[in-house]
Length: 222
Length: 285
Figure 1 (spheres, chains in turn purple, blue):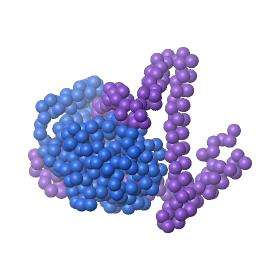
Figure 2: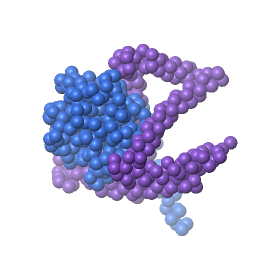
Figure 3: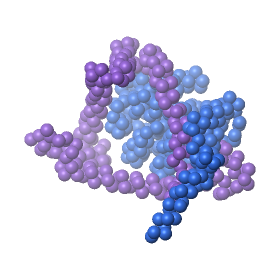
Figure 4: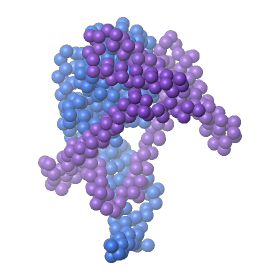
């Protein structure tokens, strides 16, 4: 029963959703109603996933504090900030509107924005350092990658046009035009191949789940 | 250690310093490098410019503060364009850290453009469930978002008159830092037949070119450059145009250090050792 029930639910739901995708749902009432119900249930499940994520985060950090881990100060920061923001969002919100809660926006603007901006802006420095160390023209493939990357990096910013003018590279031979060509042709060809491959892989996996061949989503069963 | 060896082993703190100087300098003293427009951005601009029935544009703000410098200029430029044409803009978010960013943009639109909330613009907030939220918006906007971010009943907003479902939108513009763009294309575009366009971070944008070529998106803004192009097209240069000088010099710094690294590698002792090893292997074969 522990195996048969989930496999049966997966089979029926999978077959129905695939069927509903190809049917003119507005003309077939039962398909539309069932489809909308399943959709709504999925959104409810997504909310539970958020709870699961927050719960797991808190439990993990509570364990670190209990074990007197040397980094437990950071766990305190995580727990206190999570609970403080949740408290403000849940209990200090006037009416039913989170958008009207100025405390919430204040925390966002004064904590999350500068912290995220700092983390992301460090990328510029680390990308420069990593590119300097790793981007070596060791073989033909690496050389091609290096040349393409350099052209796209220069061609996609205004200085690319200035350099092209300086070198008298015009029309299709200007750096912006070559960068556009790289993005339009080789990049698109590779991306299309990868996308089609992923699509086929997803279809195969979905079929395996629907027909109960792939059951790892149920866990080990212990 | 000769000069070539030194070039291949520069202390990374010098790289950080060079990057800091060359990125800060044009911010303090703009160079005014010319920004040219690309066909992907021009086609998005033309599409919005030619919307005649004044049906709302859905602006999907699916990004947080880390990518805001790249994507917020796009949002502001498109809102400016739409409001100037009398096209309402309805914002939604499928990323949990987006509402804080969107809230600031909506305030800006009211203060800077004089947009009337509920009539010219509306922000419906964040909802978990990505794919399912898009599908539910197809069944009814107020079904997915019964209230807007500010607590007003969605159905009571004047902007929602005649705008019952996602299918009634004139365009879905996804401003994305993640793979949510694919979902808007698959479900809003391919399944519901709504025109879709994208504004993506520079690292994600190359993935969307395939959809532009196939006609699945009507336009594409890539990175800060895409935002700068749109700002120029609407005739209101802003943060993205200002940022292009810094980005240009930042890229130059990276390229210069890559060249240094390669010169050091090939002309220095280490590179010559590798070449010698390769030729020895060739002899053995």
